[in-house]
Image 1 (cartoon, rainbow over the protein chains, first blue to last red):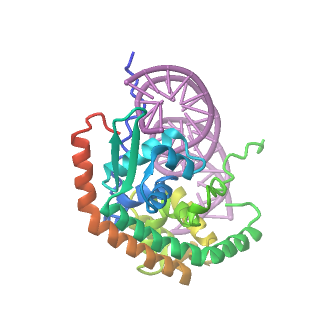
Image 2: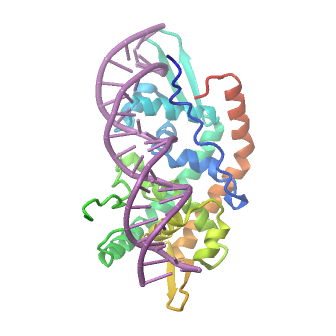
Image 3: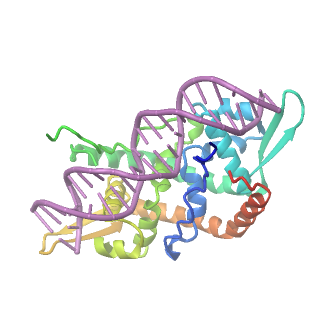
Length: 134
Length: 134
DNA sequence: CTGAATCCCCACGGATACTG
DNA sequence: CAGTATCCGTGGGGATTCAG
């Protein structure tokens, strides 16, 4: 037993597709998953405990919250502080680099919002004349 | 036969986790996949044909290049022009909105580059004292 | 050359139960 | 409360083949 090591989680290794990559893949791999951005957005509002994050982000499972925060901590974007009380208490907050990224994300969010309508329009327009879907 | 419709490709429906989403998910779902950003980056340099994109982006399969460009076209970020010659020829170029997004991506790429070293350092540091991995 | 169609693997992530 | 461990379904995406 204990032979099956199912989750080694080496986020599928370096992509390093090419130098056109701009080295942006590192960031995108983190931003690309469903939850990291939300966690960062929530933490941008201030320090949160595990359960607070869990509540603030409807739909995320404990498992994914754990994994997501872990990865963010590993990347130096989030700082984790454990108070050895009983019951235990953990606080998460953005690091300086995390806040820096948060700002960059906000920029992208602004772009997203200001073009949301156009994208939706383009999609419905495309969908209209492509009944088969993608 | 023809009963099994395996790939309907409705990119797993609206997430709409919550309003904290900032509506950024629409964009992130596109940027999150492995190839869209690279296609945009390449097209930012100018018009490209299908085969040119295929060569410019090592590692991408024909299938994924087709799907990626299709989705970008659907979102109104890329424009597709077909010349009914023989053999056929297709040109892809960014739309105004596509160039706008490209600029936003460049910003993020800049952030990524300027913090690449710090992230790498944070990771190796974390990995050093966490032998078990994530 | 530019795709569309098929097959198929496996990583992502949800649900649940257990621990300190 | 804050995770960890296990099981398992879904679908993203690679490889290959066919078509216009």
